[in-house]
Every structure is written in structure tokens, then in C-alpha cells.
Amino acid sequence: MTARPVGRAAPTLESVAARAGVSRATAGRVLAGSTTVGHDAREAVLRAAAELSYVTNRAARSLMTRRSDSIAFVVAESEERFFGDPHFALVLRGAHAVLAAHDVQLVFSILSTEADRDRFQRFARGGHLDGVIIVSLHGDDPLPRRLQEAGVPVILSGRPYTEIDGLSYVDADNVGGARAAVRLLVDRGRRRLATITGPLDMTAAIDRRAGFDAEVAASGLCSHGVRDGDWSVAGGRRAMLDLLAAEPRLDGVFAANDLMAFGALQAVAETGRSVPGDIAIVGFDDSPTASATHPAITTVRQPIIAMGEALATRLLMLIERGEPLEPMVMGTELVLRETA
Image (cartoon, rainbow, N blue to C red; front, top):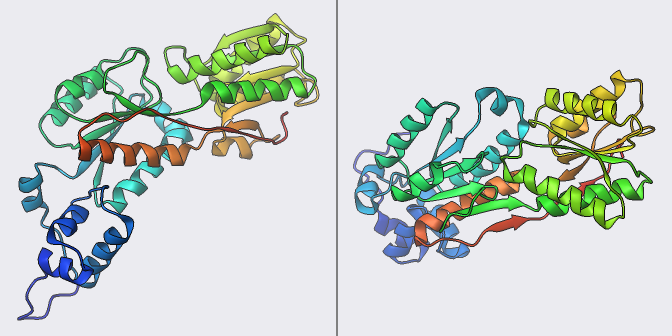
């Protein structure tokens, strides 16, 4: 680190504002991470701060703003599931990029046990966090409600299992994406269709199952099998083996994520069938797994990194404004590869 020359005064907020050509208040809002300042003014302040080597005094700012400049990214899953599914890392990547650009610290937690949850709730209630992003909730989890009651702003990745007043979330169009997957299978001439769902205590799995059912019915067909999965490769393999044992003539399967689609591919190969010759398979997510398998998995892309960015951006807005935001649902699209 280069030392400041002896005798040179440390840059002040006033000098940053003067160099940027804005008011002291505007410069202060930008350097405090506000998202309400216009793009040009914000860029001018950040450029002036960099040119003057201005460093915000975090302790003083926290006393003034009563903020910690820290956001938690919480995954309500086991460590095994977190590290085994690339979905989480991609959401985290998007959120981190936004928070880093606003000079906000990201605190990461995996809540796999009740002890983890109790410890995290004590930490959050202690004023150490300005807000929390929660990913992968199951059922009517009380965590978001408890954090809100403690005055901690919260945003969810995915629609909540039951509606909670004032709770914001970012989601993908899971119903529409699943319907598009089924339409593709039907367009490919498949008529004996089945699905492998995610855990049905999660809204993403519920909505993808609903999309499958709706499009099968709209196509004048009937379902030839439903098996619950757990988002894992092993779960997809087990479910596919069960489906084939119950209906050997299956010719199309929609798996609710790419890891389960990969497991389904393994099961099809084990039973001496081919993909897509005998059975076409469509996954969901467009995770790195989908393009790395052989054959590569046709899937429904949800904008995972962009969803992480939106979660962080909207949480910062929520913290700044103190008012609930409308839910945000992002579009999906088919990615055609080799399995369908």
C-alpha cells in the first residue's frame, strides 16, 4: 500500500463532492451504497473517490446510518446439497457481484441444523446485518417471518410456500418453463410422458409439476407417471428406474432439474435404452451439468446469475426505501441440445 505523502491532508467527503461536481449529501449517499442516485452522478462520485484515494470511515458511517454494510446470503440446505448443486454457486455469484460493486460485505451461511438456525437468528437480531437473502426454503419455514419480526429486511429466492405480508422475492417462470418442456416433447412426437419432480415442499418443484400437468392436459394426453425426486443425480436415477419399471414404453420425461435429468440418463443407459432414440429427456436450469453430459441435456434455462443479481439489487432497494417490493418473476427459455 502506498503511503500518503507527509503533509498532504486526507481527502474529505467535501473534496470528493467538489471534484465530482455534486453536493456533499449526494456524495455521501453514493458512498453509503444508496441505489437512488442517478447513474452519471454515481459514476462521477466513485471516480472522484478513486482519484483522491478517499476511503470511507466505516465505523463513523455505521454510527451515522445505523447500518453494518453487511448482507447475509443464507442457504437452508445441507452442506452436501449446497456443494453438490451448481445452482447455488451461480446465484451466489450474481449476488456477490452486485454487493461488491456497492462496497457491501457478503456474509455466507448454510443452515443445515436447528443449532445453525438459532445461531444465525441471534447474529441477525444483534444488528450485524442490514438484510438477508434466503435461498432454497422448504415448506412453511418460519425463518423469514422471524427475521422480519426482528426488523431485518428479507428477500427470498423463489416464491414462498405460504404468502407472508411484505415479503419480497425473485423467482423464475417455473410453470411456463415446464410447459415449454412438455410442448417440445409433444412436438418431437412423444406421447407417453412422465415427470420427475423436485421435493414437493418447495414451490419451484410444485410449480414445475403444475406446468407439466397443465401442458399434458392441453395436449390431449395423460400422464404416464410421476415420481418425486430430491434434486440430486442419485434421486433422478432412482425415480427414472421406478418410472421405467411401471411403464416400460415411456418415450418422454421432464425432469425438474438438470441433475435429476443426468440421473435419468444413467438409468436409461442401465436398462439398455437410448436417449433420445427410445426416450427423450428435458431438464431444467441450464446448469453447467447440462452441457457437460453425453448426450448433452436439452433443458429450460432460468437466468440463475441474473436472479442472484436481482436478489441483491432489490434487497438494497428494500433497505434504502424501507417499503416492500412487488415480486419479480424472470422469464425462461428452451435450450436445445441432444436429449430431445
